[in-house]
Length: 207
Image 1 (cartoon, rainbow, N blue to C red):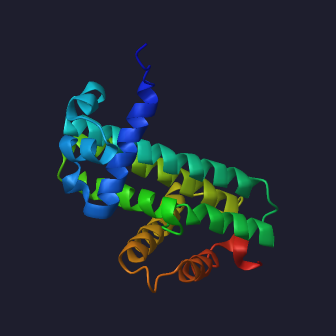
Image 2: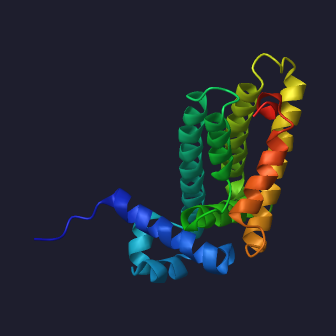
């Protein structure tokens, strides 16, 4: 009796192969043939689920965006459940922002893949819609976080946008530094930088 293949599970296996290739050798190597070899599949098997390299890359980009967004939403819920200004609240905020950073092996792979796709979207139009979704998804979470940290104090849309972009720029910079210089941009250093940045937000000044 032929073995029944779970199509979604097989797609995820292929996506994980894409992630491993990007993390180790860069996006340029993530062709259908290389991905098939990494996943231990025939090229024809990969083509059964993804007709082209572009289709595979778009799907993989969406997968990493969904993974990061899911973790951020879970972490944001944890922030909402803590008393503002408490140590638990500040720890929950730092945990949320840590989801952007390569602080463990899983987060490091996702951060590397996420950065690679975002950079590639600048010159690969097929990736642009996912890049836009990526930015809007993350910006929405960061905007909600800033409103939680400053209840009733940010009443101008421009102020909210400015603060969200300032925090996003900090996160992008930390992520890039941590990926490029992991020997000195450690989890502790990242946490110190985040804590210093968050002190500028009124809800944490008393913490």
